[in-house]
Length: 117
Image 1 (cartoon, rainbow, N blue to C red):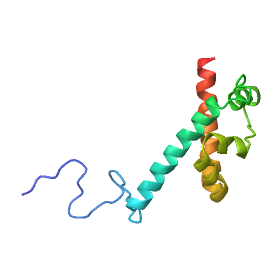
Image 2 (spheres, rainbow, N blue to C red):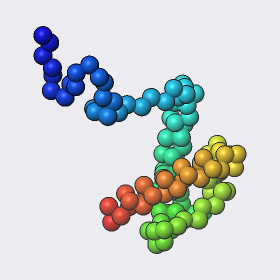
Image 3 (cartoon, rainbow, N blue to C red):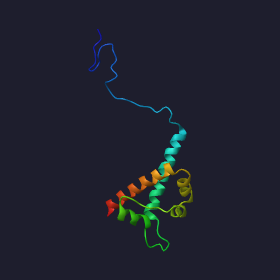
Image 4 (tube, rainbow, N blue to C red):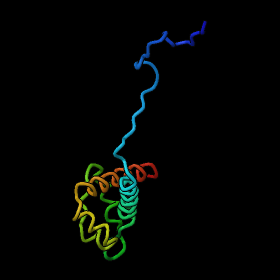
């Protein structure tokens, strides 16, 4: 006679027990590249927000704005293009995707600035 293991209930399977696993079968190598591209773009936005200075080079335009306002930042597209023309084009051509990445970068930059202040 076979001994039952703990949690084993005879010959019936119980799908409610144990871990649940999910696999997205539609996830492709192209999706992976898009995720990587998005991550790189978010890092570039963060660098832009941290380091972009005014024309005189005296003021960190967006760093200071984030610290003052905390809940919003107004970014000029011309500044983004000055910093990285490709990033500016991505904002224009795919705003839904890249504005979200800019917002995430702004939140991350604000948190890091508050932590070091």
